[in-house]
Length: 145
Image (tube, rainbow, N blue to C red):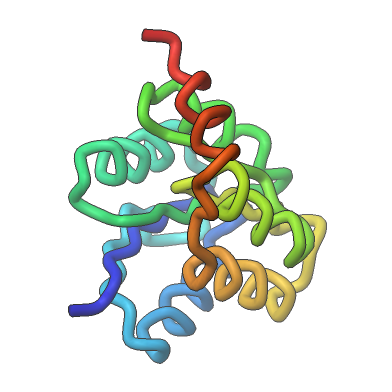
């Protein structure tokens, strides 16, 4: 069974979202697209919340959100209690977000990296495992309740 990935963006991330869906499907992943369906201007929370909820509810293993800076989607996703959304603009950051923080949503800044780097970051994110150990102790202290 392939890993299920939830993905969404705003208008600034639409082109990257489309390319990343193709990239992930070619890699054998089951991808659920939460929109948008065009590059018309939209509000990022309308797409970040459904992605975060799907991951939080266990209906997808990981989530990917894309907007211009990645800040808006990361802030929105992190409002969800069980979400650990990380902004990544380099491979090493994506790897550390998974290894040390058990991030379950990666946020891509489409206006600041090219699509090839975005693909590398996503590949690193979806293939890297949480290390646990001392990191688990820290991660378990993140939730407010």
